Image (cartoon, rainbow, N blue to C red; front, side, top):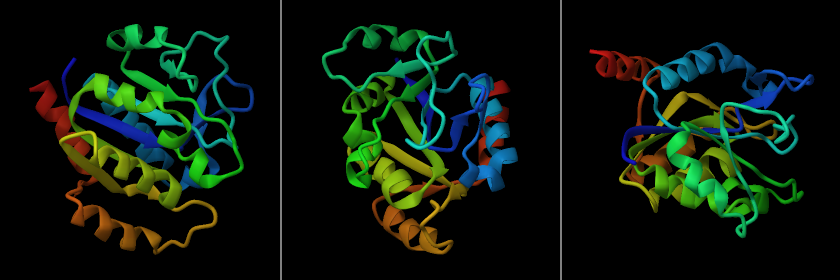
Length: 196
């Protein structure tokens, strides 16, 4: 597999209380309209989307048939790897360990790294909810795994205990490491380029 783009959504989504549809995490409601438009574009260009759900949010139940592949926490489970080529959406499972560092996505689910490597995208585009142990953790892990890391500043919101200006200091760190900021409109251009 080789994709031009892949996307990583950090904790923007959760299931509705009835467990039927996805909704925005309360912290991400301010960007919900743009988020769902971006999800539509990701689907239209058939780009891979990895996503996580905040450990305090409503998470998918494996008993239901859904349009994504669940990436298990257990490293002894191997069967899911064979299914990666058949899917475009990947849900990264996590446990709530009451420790932010341990709950960070790639620390909590070692299979997530294998999934990124198998998807083998030239560029990863990151957005989401929560900066320090969320988006920053994902960005730093991707720097060591993939060729190009981009992010969408207007689709990144601080976590509930983070200040609104925290993103500015993290942006500088990411860009010093080679991350490229893109706009919400740039995602629309991807759809245009893909279509024509």
